[in-house]
Amino acid sequence: MLNGNRWYDAYPELSTCFDMLKQKKPLIRSKIAQELLNYLQTHNPGVIEKNVLNFPLDVLTRRWYDQSPYLWLLVNGLKYVSSEQIIKTTEIFKELLSGDI
Image 1 (cartoon, rainbow, N blue to C red):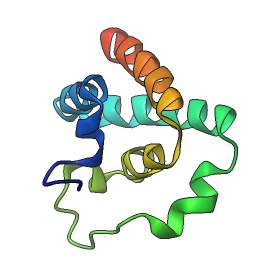
Image 2: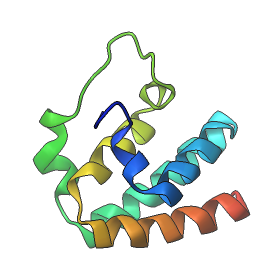
Image 3: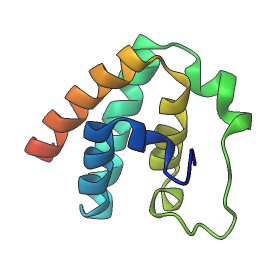
């Protein structure tokens, strides 16, 4: 968290996407997260592998995204890409949410 907010609250559209994703059924959430992770890995090779040890792990899985390994990797992995890449990923995120793949 940054200043009492989630890190992604600094990106209002991304924050809205995560809030919308939270309301989806688990299968849809996982599919969207997998698509976004594939995109991240293609455009930021190694970003997950290089930083995964820095990702917070809540053993009690209190956060909604801790319950899925794909969501956990997505939420934490996005922290390590550029702002420009976050904006591009958010655009894809919005498209995926609108179509529910």
